[in-house]
Structures are given as structure tokens and as C-alpha cells.
Image (cartoon, helix red, strand yellow):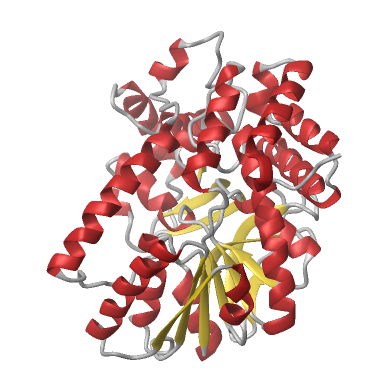
Length: 439
């Protein structure tokens, strides 16, 4: 069996996912094909994974493929393809995503999922995914594409609507949503045996039900404890917690993400909200700089002292592969097309995040029914932007980029239409060859 990792220069993530496979008896004897366009980063990943492979008993084989000219060979015959690319990297593209909007007074926190930064990130990633899909159709048409790349709903939605490749989008948030909430509110005694239902869209899926092992609804106690949490000066999840108060439900992604997905929190006319809700503006560039520096230190330390022992993480990828291969059963929160109205009050061409069963037949999405009307309405403000961005990527029409930005909640609440258009034009020019030509 062959497992191909696209963007294997993302060394920490490649180590987690492929390390998980090496910890799994059904997967450990696979060929692990590493693909990247950066030879140095790929070599760093190969060094670490080869050392890890030896510590895990020497099973399997690692192969490396550098550059677009070797991409088909990396994909050829793969059973699973894991996608972790970042088109344009931190420098220059993430810097552009933050600095150009800042000139227009538009501030962001993460800018990888929605907002003008998420739109631009989607527009430069989708053409590369189209190339991947064309290659896969030729050399591994039956492979399952496991997409970890943001903007999740845009990228996964494009793959599912416009290519024949079997695709599921995977995030890290669903696994830790309810446990994180209970831990923050000092309700750790309710963790064991809890039951939950989560559905919506990526980074804004809703914790619709949370019950303890005896079937007791935990939301009343959660809501009782909210005021005390919100009064804490150092509470770093206040936006999400306030969602419970205003919309009735907790959502999957962190406050620094959700602060920029709506009209409410990052507002130039209300600068005091930044401090009130502990909103970290320019957070993603800060993280990128830290991660780059930390990785240099970590890599040097590993070369000197050897690779740390890897234990299987809570990432979904290896468990999906394992259960498809063995015919077992496993439940995930997966990003899939809303075909057949899995969520009845969201459109069918939306990419939704719902419970999915994984077995020998692949990924089987579960029917959820309607979301609470206010939750569906919040999701639609994001889905509008996602669908228009995909439309722009497919048609190459600049007007759809304008429309996506105009309908983006944060952008539209801060800037007028003419300014939005000027900003989009500046962003397209600044991205240069990282974007196709738009008419």
C-alpha cells in the first residue's frame, strides 16, 4: 500500500500523520511517498521520518519526490493522499494577506479560513488542487484525498464539486471541542463517557448536544458557569463563550479564528472590543515567525539527540486509513458536500462538517437534519463567501472575488464597496504569479 503526503515539507505535521501510520499495524508496512517543491524542507522531513521508522521497527519504506515534474510519480498507485500544502508560504503570501488589507484599515487575526485573507488563500490554493486532481485521475483514480489545507470548506468544496476525486476534509477542532469546553469550565468530571453531536461548517460547527455518561444535558450547567468565565481578565476564549449566550451553542473553532468570521468583534469604531475579548490581531504572522524559529531549534536538537518517541495522536488521518483497510468502524467529524441535505437548512452545494462513519466502504456522512435557525443563519454568512470564492476560482471572473469580499461579514462591515474593490485589485497585483489571471 502507498500513502502519499503532499506538502511533506510541513515537517511537524508530516511527522504526526506518518508517525501515526507507523504506530498502526495495518499501515506501518506501507510505502510513504513524500512530495514537496522545496528540496531542503523535504530532506529535513525525510531525515526525521527515516529515523522514526527505524525506532518503530524498520517497517515500510520512505520515498521522496521533489518538484512538479515528479508529482505524478509521487501519486502513482497511491491508496491514500494526505494534503498539507501551503501555496505561497508565510513569505510572501501570508504577509501580503495581512499587510495589504491593513493599509485599508482592515485588521485580521488568522486569515486562513474566511475574511479577505481566507479568500486570497483559497484563490491561490484551488488551482494547485486542480492540478493534483488531474494527476490523481490519471495515476491513482481510486485514492482517497485527505485534505487538511485551509480554507477547508473552499478547498474541499471545490474538490468535491469540480473533480472526480474522493475527498474528505479534516480539521483538528472537532476532536477537542467538548473536552476543551468542559476543562475551561472546571467540569472535567463530566469528560468520561460523554455524548455529543457536532454539525455545521468547518471552524463554525455547533456543539448541538452534550450529555454526560448518564444522559444528563450539560448545557444548563455550562450556561450557569458562563458569567464567571467571562469575568476573568485572562480568559482567552471569550468570543466562543459569548456565542453560547447569544446563539445558544458553543462552536468548534477558537476565539481568535471566530473573531474574524462575523460582524461583531473586530471593529475600528469600537477598538475597546479588542481588549475586552482578548482578540490577538496579527496572530497568524506571529505564530508563523515563532514556528519557523522553533523548528530550526527543534531540528538541530533532533540531529544531536535523536528523534523523540512518537505516540499516536488524535489526528483522524491514520484512523480513517486503518478502518478503510481493515473494515473496522470509526466515527469522525468530516467535511463533505451537503449532498441530499445532510443539514436540511443549508444548501446542497455547501461543504458541511458532520459526523461521518468510516468503514471498508470509505467515508459515510450522517444525516443531521436542521440546525437551529440562528446557527444556520450564522453559517450562511460564511457559506456565501465560500461559494463565491469557489465560483471565482472556477470562472476566473474578478467580479466574483469582489462579491465574495463584499459579502464577507468582517470586510463588508468595515469597508465600503469601492474600497473593497481597490483592496482586492491591490491584493491580486501583490500576489502576482501565485494567482491565475482574472478578467
